[in-house]
Image (cartoon, rainbow, N blue to C red; front, side):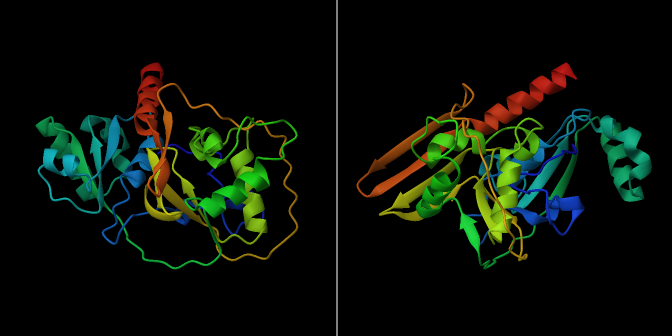
Length: 281
């Protein structure tokens, strides 16, 4: 997996691990029910950090089409498929004996190497959560961080700045734009213990009935944990991104007491960017 300089909404100061950067163990996908179905978020997050050197892909075995095509039971697992098993052999010295034997067998058979990755489902109650699926949290976020920037942003509500929140850069930040990284710092200083935020790796949606959240897909959670409150001054010049790539579309809808929005095309766009990077590498 690729190493990155940033982790989305992690922040960089006063953290308990990794020199201020939160560890991977603090990030979770949000399932829609007790069976752990997260609509493929975890698999797509893993796909976003694939190495360009090895042709591999992660699949969500909760998806009916994936389970049927592989003739395997549907379950809360992620399937790793290395399309050219021989690409793993140069790393054999780091493998266990059983793993190396399985790789060699796939190479001898001329077949892809497949491995099922187990997942853990946690039914957790966490206090101090800023849940961006909720309309009130979205309004607070927009008013606190977007509305009064020094440089104007052509946005009227939370959905308008989704292109910034769903930035495709690994970790959501770059050396030239560390906005999401800085937001993590500020939220932690304000006492937020966990943040539910939209995934940039797959299509995202929320649905409301009479203002209450009733359905969603495509969301993650980062767990900050309790930490001492401290002064934090968040200064943002503004000019948030409001335009998606051409293949990605924001759709809003509402009628008869139901409302919501969805972002379509993110998963396909991520895969196309990865394929282009592989061709150029």
